[in-house]
Amino acid sequence: MALLRNCWYVAAWGHEVGRTLLGRKVLEEPMVLYRTESGAPAALLDRCPHRLLPLSKGTLKGDTIECGYHGLTFDCSGQCVRAPGQERIPPTAQVRSFPAVEHMGMVWVWPGDPLLADKVKLFDQLPQWAASQLASPAWGLNIGPYTHVKANYQLLTENLVDPAHVTYVHKSTLGTAAMADIPIETTQIGDTLLVTRWTPDSPAAPILQRFGKWPGNVDRWQYYWLYPPSIAVVDFGSHLPGMERTEVARDEGIRIYSCHFLTPETEASTHYFWLQLRNFAQTDAAVSQDIVDQFVLAFDEDKTILEAIQEAEADPRVETGVKLALDSGSVRLRRTVARLIDEEQAAATPSPSGTSAGVPARHGAKSPTPVSH
Image (cartoon, rainbow, N blue to C red; front, side, top):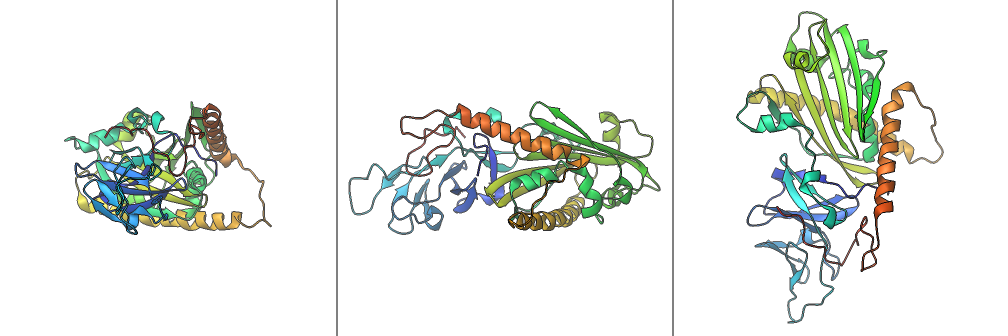
């Protein structure tokens, strides 16, 4: 599976990673995640090089993992520091370590060349997040549950640059019939994709009406930002009809940023992490829970559709080549990600060990010192 490897991916929510061992596959790489005694996240290849038992089946001792089969013990750099019953530790008794950092309440890992891992490359396109984490009451935050989807990550990213599906998939939550024939506009800014749609003077979507409680019609906006390969931010909301189409006017309405962090697990499955920021009832815990419940319903609707498509795509007897005007965002997205992967692979140079910089060895070789925590 061709994937963009030299970038940060979310491996887990921060609260999932602690002083117990968590096994999770990222870009086909089995990883074991944990926190050191200082609280820093660490990630190793989840395989003991002796008999390949997953290290996540072992025991965390201090900052080291003891294999649950024969006791080989590895520090957080992947170096074996103990081989029971012998003084000499085999030089091949090493596992790959992955750079890991905590950012925005999530643990991110870098599955590509560790020499290229840099905190500066972490996603930072959401200044509202910073405001929500400070004393400012401007933005409320709610965090959804970890979600596993049995579908290729690009099916999910395409769904997140597709305002048109909302009318049909999310009738009880995010969509309205009035939106069905409203055209969309697609813009590309560098590698970032923006798909927008305004639906004027029409009934509010159920989720927005739940909190806006307008007496009549509203103007609604949808701004779908997609940051390749797999981070999406959907800015959507409503205000009274006739509103100006400006940032200031949108802040005066009911406004939600729905943020989606998608991490390929395998060719046919994806880890899905999501949260929302809002400009209303910012400190109301009951509202936060209500929003989570509503979006769980909405994303379960997506999950059903996307898993059905994944299953259908596996059937070699059926093909589709039909494209519609609403596919502009997904077509551009696929092309952009394919180009980025091609550029990464072209830039990869052989290392002294014979592996490429872009696609490190899956087993054995110890990685250079990971990014500082």
